[in-house]
Length: 364
Image 1 (cartoon, rainbow, N blue to C red):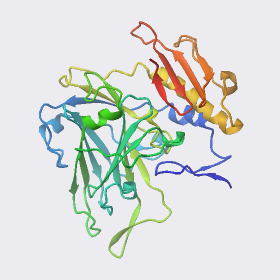
Image 2: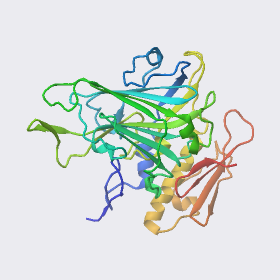
Image 3: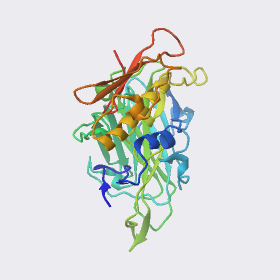
């Protein structure tokens, strides 16, 4: 059987050609029904001490995220162990903390920028302006070994990770609730704490960093968990057993590199209870354009070309909420689909577009 092996990292499925559902069907049936998670991230006037303990007053006041789920959502069983996270921010840093239940805390990798998910790890993904391109990733294990990388675009669209990208001034810490790499006892888990400088995140943010009141960023958090056994007093991965991917906001498919499905983080300096999360007013146009994108991916797989006809694609553009002036035109690199889409607040309808590499943006 011919296999399409997407050449990259964990969390991306090996597909058997001719057996998998088409990209458009997967989008409509597995991804689109999942509502991205939301988090209201509060400001702290007192800088945090990054020690992995998550015990300061500011952290105590910050809400936990929803418990992590399998990356495919409700289609898969509930994770074996609980994972949840918190966020805070000040003028210098974006703070992230996570609490992970784990009866056997272990790690092996000690070299910076190794492929950290080969160990159990915690991962952060950030797309500041929500255009699905130019996003950041950071992974860390229980030994506090980190891997920072920058993605100009998702792997599925030909993106290549820039491993040389670094986060100067990054602060990270791990707190093990138990004993590390000791199979003879049972642990409670491990916690991580990060402080990511806004100065670094501003490099490709294309929006204020630090954010201004009410700004929203797209964010994904993932935990990789391997099934293990104990042999000769050591932890050993069970052979030929894939990792579990437990995430804050499910993707619907085994691929963390779909920024359009990440959760929303809204930043505020107002006191808890004084502000509410505001749903993304552009959510509907984002979904409508992503449907065109996945229809094009499916069409290209069959015909080795892009289509400039919505009927050929099997997509019916919405004219009830959009303006009806949908365009689909050829470009030197592929295609561009765009539409003007009014928001509930009224005013001139901003025009949005998507291209063959999934670049989704409000046009200037």
